[in-house]
Image 1 (cartoon, rainbow, N blue to C red):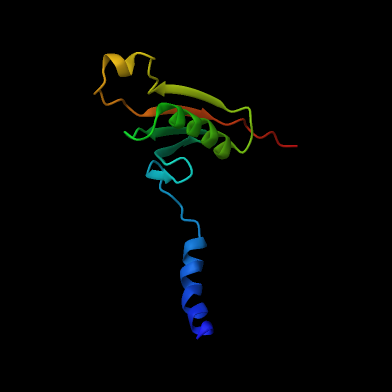
Image 2 (cartoon, rainbow, N blue to C red):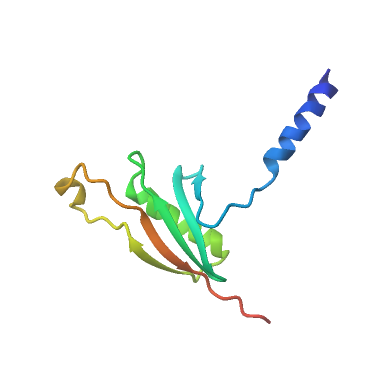
Length: 116
């Protein structure tokens, strides 16, 4: 009986362990930070990352995710992050409590790898 269960579970576990290539610009979900984002490759070392806001997720978590994801994409420090939209001021929530804020979008430029 144990062998039968193991044989039945093996294809399921194998399918779950395979990484799936995501289309450029397709919406993705990060389970660690609980945020939704889109990543578009602009050139060899340049990307556009858009973190989609959620009513349950605060801005500080979106910004932290953006920096951590940038490090993960570039695999090194020294990346350049240019924020395009999505920065709130301290009074935005007080002045416009029901306003739907836009996505936190930034261009990411990874350091070029010098050939040795």
